[in-house]
Image (cartoon, rainbow, N blue to C red; front, side):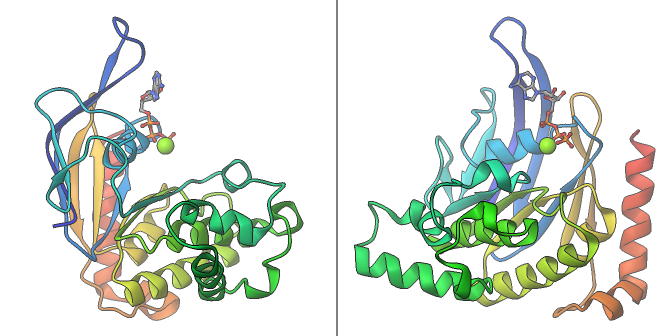
Length: 254
Ligand SMILES: Nc1ncnc2c1ncn2[C@@H]1O[C@H](COP(=O)(O)OP(=O)(O)OP(=O)(O)O)[C@@H](O)[C@H]1O
Ligand SMILES: [Mg+2]
């Protein structure tokens, strides 16, 4: 098992003025599984991701494990990708130097250069290594962020609305690139999105958070075979069934 959450409760806000956002969330994500998290704005999706990433401590009585070990800080082997690529990248560093950042102190200089080159190749940016992020399009900048997350060859990727700010065409290209990359590397993915079609297209399961405090309102299995393709998969009966089920739950939790 990659992630195991048992009876997770999480509070936000200052001590004495805090509010419970998540309550009694139990969720397993198997190794190599792709799980999307959905739910209305403010329901607690980012909070759940922060708890999985070891950036937020859940309340006493909660259990969160990554690969069998309790999460009590950012675990080795887990990388994060955020929605806002402009503030996630360092604009004064080259693309290569941004991707190299998480490897500093872990690999030797020649090993880092080799890893950075291989990772930029994976995301199709080998020829932009010496550019600076502001010289790239939004889709390219998001690819740099993905490369930086993949550079350490993580066992798991946590992604918070990573494609939310992109146009539809760039978004579907990146969805397919992501699926190919995680299939190749057997990476576990927990992916937050507001886009039902995107969640169903990418995922093995779509988990919907609902309520206040939020718990798991539904856990919908997507039965579409892999590899998936934008047109064929989205037309399949399995896709449409999962999509209408998720739709029903989300609109039912408003
Ligand atoms: N540092 C904080 N201090 C106080 N409240 C917070 C803090 N962080 C989050 N919250 C509150 O916790 C709740 C859940 O926030 P969270 O960011 O997890 O929602 P979300 O589901 O990711 O929403 P969105 O879809 O808009 O990104 C919200 O009501 C938010 O206002
Ligand atoms: Mg959020």
